[in-house]
Amino acid sequence: QVQLVESGGGLVQAGESLRLSCAASSSILSIPDIEWYRQAPGQQREWVASITSGGIPAYTDFVKGRFIISRDIAKNTVHLQMNRLNPEDTADYYCKGLIGESIYWGQGTQVTVSS
Image 1 (cartoon, rainbow, N blue to C red):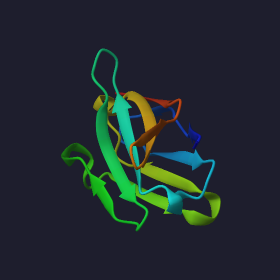
Image 2 (cartoon, one colour; image 1 turned 120 degrees about the vertical axis):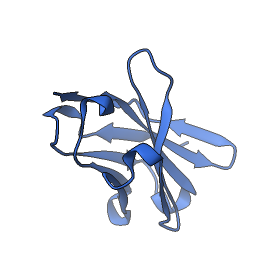
Image 3 (cartoon, one colour; image 1 turned 45 degrees about the vertical axis):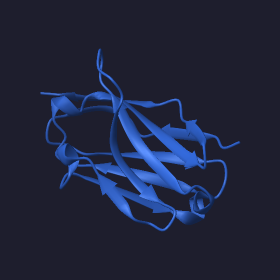
């Protein structure tokens, strides 16, 4: 069993930045894939970015060049640095861990970007 806890959300203005964190209850090196998803009001949850236990990142097209996923192995934490935010980035952001067929979700953190 793995617990994931997101933090770092908040209210910012367009053009500003936020850094989200996903703290795992176990070593992130034991989690083959950690992903960030987001869900805007009335929308389906969508994949944003991911990082493998080997440190390989991947991004969806609409955040490439603006968001950076990274990890702090010593703190068992994965970060999502979000730059040049715009109102369309407003959503609840969730961290997801994949270990084999097991899927673990955090409770989410809210991001609101005002114009």
